[in-house]
Image 1 (cartoon, rainbow, N blue to C red):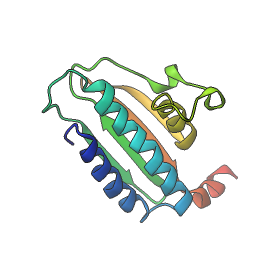
Image 2: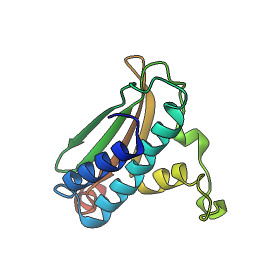
Image 3: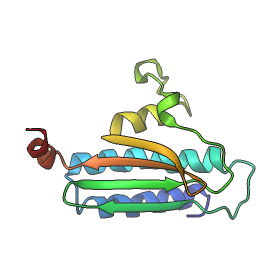
Image 4: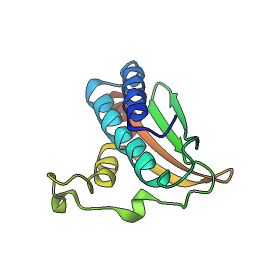
Length: 138
């Protein structure tokens, strides 16, 4: 994915369309919202002042259980674990141009994992099919 907001918009629409094949409408909407924030933040923050040709790898894996979205920062980007930078959505100014992304991500994803994989920062967001979750919770 190239680091432009237009590329983010196109990628999110494409990924959301594919997620709809595996997830119910509500979970697919959470998938789209959360990962629009992830990709926007990567472009705005991780690529800021960096190489315009830097590569962000996206891997989406679907199974009967749901969809897992993984974003890999370009090499050399400083780590930023969203779980360590959580913002209470009740304290966010929703009229502000920024500051909501991490809260939205944490609120939307069913599971989040973050860490280094092969020298690159990887953020993994899981979105589980609610009907199948009921079966595994019992």
